[in-house]
Length: 59
Image 1 (cartoon, rainbow, N blue to C red):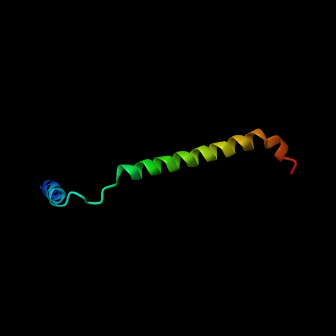
Image 2: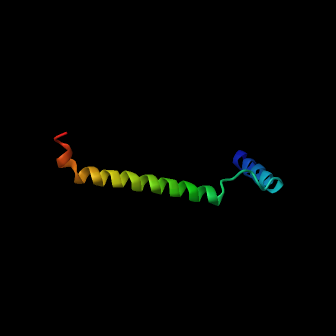
Image 3: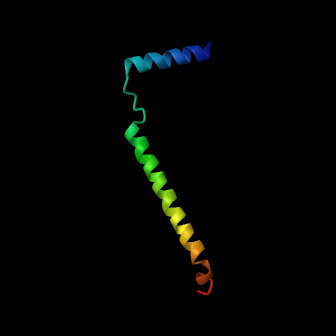
């Protein structure tokens, strides 16, 4: 009963105020691009360190 009333209140609020500040598609695209860029940079650093690991041991 409580869950039903909560869902009903949420639907009424959405109908009354359609722009509730939900996350936009642009924000999702920016976050995905940022995370992808960070993963690519970290992967590149890991590959470079693995490649030159033997030469870096003597430092």
